[in-house]
Length: 481
Image 1 (cartoon, rainbow, N blue to C red):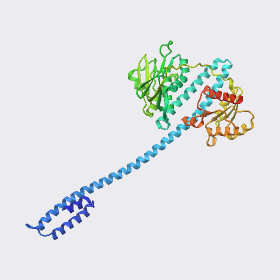
Image 2: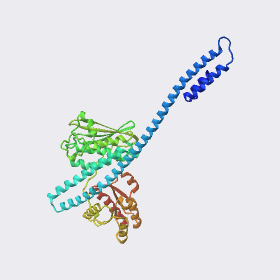
Image 3: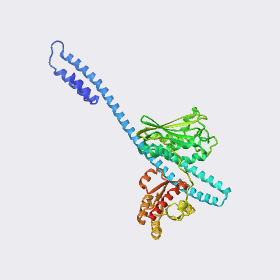
Image 4: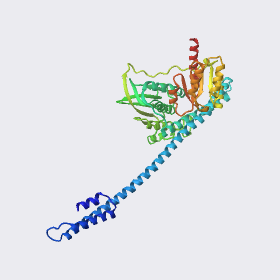
């Protein structure tokens, strides 16, 4: 009986085969079993062995049903895994297509916008020189509209990159003080233009943040820009926008505080949604399109150990708080407030007579940049290919003061390699300006090196003139040396 139980329970043969073997063994045991004392040994053995066979058949049937169920489940699981792999491959391909689309849209839209900004700057300068104020105002408004379009494009493409996970994050230790000073310098002109007082308050300690420098700069910058837009001008010393950083254990909380119009408590969560502007019912474009805070939240969600919150009171202002992991290095002797360096209009006179090589394969962009350079009395040599520009540069006896080059060039040539070839041919290394419409410029800055400034299209004329002035200054120092 024990042998029959093991036979049915563990051999896992089909029921008919198991039953045939079991009943045959039982019959043999009944016929040839040794005689026992008392009663009919045949009847007793038959009862025992029949019970063992019946019980074993039940166990075997249950086991067979279980095995069949497991087989079907495994087959369904394999089918589901196959479908999941196909869907994952399709999702990865869709994500790759989205990334390619973002790059293509970014590049193709930035090209005509760059040309438009350059032409508008030339037009504005000429109208200003001719004192045609009636035509100057529309030109300046058109220039502001194109700049707003560029800002909107940046917000949309940046949000898309963070949503798709294609934005490269470099988590490192970033010093707090220089970061906030850089943000202050970037927004003080806008604040002064609106009559808003902008201040920065740093902790006594020297603080390192564990973050991605580029992303954190974008987050704080959006918060500061938003605060400036919705804060009215106040008397000196009364209100404005304050950027304050405080330490709480191993965490640094960066507050952006304004004395603006504030937000109703019931609407605090609405501000994180795209295209939501609670106090801009007339859709005034000077107040943006409602993408700044949406982008802030999308970026913070991608940064490990970061969080952002908001508190506000209507007619009293708002406080946005960004929490970041931090490390304290040392104490400084004094808490030095950030002060505004002296501002002056950009002096373009050093550019007069400068010789610049311009490499740009897009005709409209190339012509617009040539017009802008000539407006500044710069002498440009502009070509669409590296070979053509190398040929022209070889025939010139003038020293090149700067190189301006697009990143994406015809024939799968990139601007970084083109600048290197030009420098090799010249025999010296003039400063260069690399202009690009790529969605992520951080890798380009790392590859380009310190002697090359990377500008993201579309850029303002001032942003273009600043590295040219540095390049011309470096060239003059080299000539005098």
